[in-house]
Amino acid sequence: MKPAQLLLVLTCVAFVFVAYSAFQVMLFRVSCSLANLPRPSLPRSIGVLFAATFAVSLPDAAIGFAVTEAYQAGGYPLWEAGLVGAFLFLPVHMLTCAAIHSWLTPVTFTDGIAVWLIESAIRFGILVAAGGIVGTVFVLARG
Image 1 (cartoon, rainbow, N blue to C red):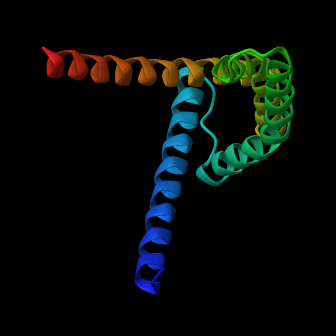
Image 2: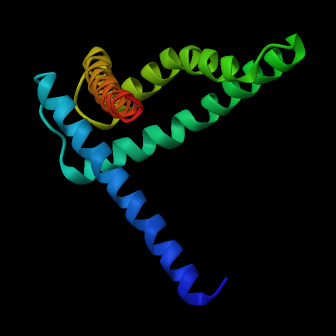
């Protein structure tokens, strides 16, 4: 790969990372506001999100590995393993994120759970809206 191409790829990766991180911080701060909690400062919000991201990565990997191995041993389709692993990981993710939020900001653990639930509802709404748009475009393109 030429140096100019490598620089372009690294620039694109950095832009996507910064844009995704900015979206996550904005979503976290909006969720705090919707839960009637004081919005943490921008550096604290970034710290909470990065701490939560790193804290949930190991349990997510362990649950994903265990479910994938169980599905392979049972001869079940692997796409189901991903779905089951995601649902099994939800309570672990919620408890970890709520604990980190309550540890790094002056809120209670139950307030951290409320923020996580609101944030998840917003993400689910965005996912459903995007799926509806893609489905509508697909149906209109075929017909």
